[in-house]
Length: 200
Image 1 (cartoon, one colour):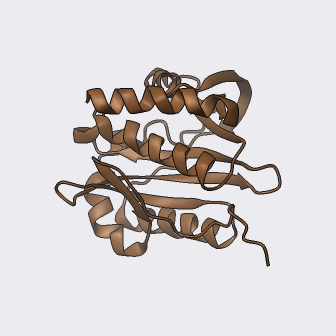
Image 2 (cartoon, one colour):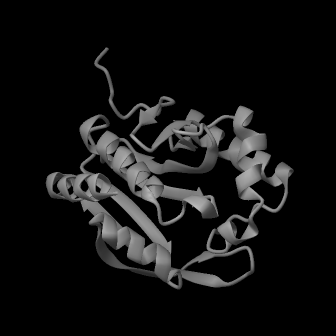
Image 3 (spheres, one colour):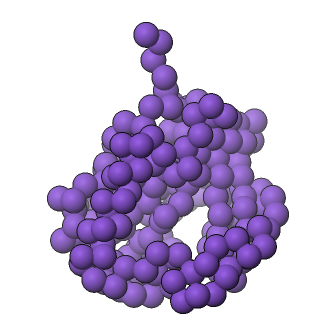
């Protein structure tokens, strides 16, 4: 049987600053040390206010992995070995060779450092050069200026806004802005991200 590179197997991705380990319930306690900062969930459709809610969040991500729609990660700072957040591939579409990168949250101490840039670099590199994707998608709440600017800094192109796309936990119906990077753009995006990481 021919190997399918889009199989959603647990995957370890490792860089100079961070590594992305396959998410597991074994990470629960250390993830809660970060996730208990409620400001991290401000722009998330799902809210995690308790360790039990985080357990459910992890279990749902792992269920998606068994169903072939997600590959979730725990983000680890390499130097210290500390758990600093989580991210994942989602909405995996094997037929059309596309994935979404998102569900990302990172401890306050590591925001605006190389951690998020390197995590995105590792995931984009794996998506295009191992999984064989032709398209990687990212999205953000239209009101979340910080996230939108960060996505553009990666080299993604803004594609448009889905109006009244999702209902948040507060009941607000949000507009969602979609972005993408396609395979033909990846070599230039890769060069730019490598330059940013080398500078840091």
